[in-house]
Image (tube, rainbow, N blue to C red; front, top):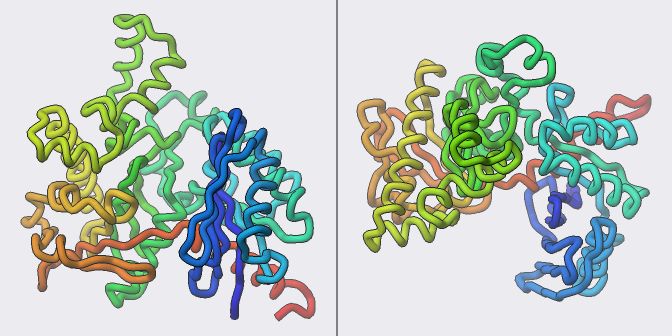
Amino acid sequence: MSAPVLVLNTGSSSLKYRVVDAADGTVLASGLVERIGEATGRVEHRVDGSTHAVDVPVADHEAAIAAALDAFATHGPDLAGVGLRAVGHRVVHGGTRFAEPVLVDDDLVAAVHELAPLAPLHNPANAVGLEAARRAFADLPHVAVFDTAFHQTLPPAAHTYAVPAAWREAGVRRYGFHGTSVAFVSRAATAALGRAVDDTRLIVLHLGNGASATAVDGGRSVATSMGLTPLEGLVMGSRSGDLDPAVLGHVRRELSLDADEVERQLNAASGLRGLAGDNDMRGVVAAAEAGDADAELALDVYCHRIRSYVGAYLAQLGGLDAVVLTGGVGENSLAVRARALDGLAHLGIEVDAHRNVTERPGPGWAARISPDGAPVAVLVVPTDEEWEIASQAVALLDAAAGARPGGS
């Protein structure tokens, strides 16, 4: 049965949207409103294989949603005619409160605001988007899906930091992110392996401008690299990843940087950008292949960190069925896939050079790039967070309908 959902991903200066059928992942339309709050914004609307772009003023998130609705009205599809079941929202940080998708009401919006100190760049924008969308689509149920929810299964040893009790009482712990993506690709990878979910051990590498590693045992997150914020863990496009905490005090003293500037540089001027001057992996790989020493070092550091996490998580899992690569880099960078897992054949993890070049994943299916007979499969699985959000939203609504008297 068709179950179209409008999925919204609200950022501080952008709004991504997609109408996706939760039943089979079919995309009816998608788009992006960017430069919100600037003098001139831009709307790109994609439908039926065509992209329609226009520059318009977009004063705030209310105006962004109005601009998206104008694009639907002009280019289709007719939202009133597709039978929308719900509006699904990506929310970055749910703290320890939210381990499942939740129907949006005033209390939920207030909670997203309250959790803003844990994700100051994301949750305020998510909350504003929730409020604006509820006004624009007052007749539809709204469902919030949290990036952190999938990682609520982390055991205490994995989510607890060795810091003073007062810090822990203030919420300092590992939360993990990319959970919606990890949930989707874990399920797809398990299906590709032909195994039961509760009998499958995976390491999921979500490699994009943001990057994370997650150990998944029986469909549950048991270890993940991102922490209190998305800054910890792997090297990323512009984020440092793991760092000796004493570095913060050192650069504040030696370079006269205040705390806000240190945090800004760790998030926006580090990672690949800090090492090679470019946060786009395509540019870094091209520069390395052309002989740029800084780019070569950046690739080495990036892949060294990945191998370190793969080894650590294999030990935590006590065995492994597959390494799963996803995200823009994981799905498309042949060089990173080969280099990141190089030298792990003794652990049963190996990339076949020919398959790495010739095997291509597609929507709904995985590409296996490990050799025949390898003890550990290496899979490339395209992520689809919007489909996952739509699926979770519809599942929540169906469960609620079934729980009501007379529900089915």
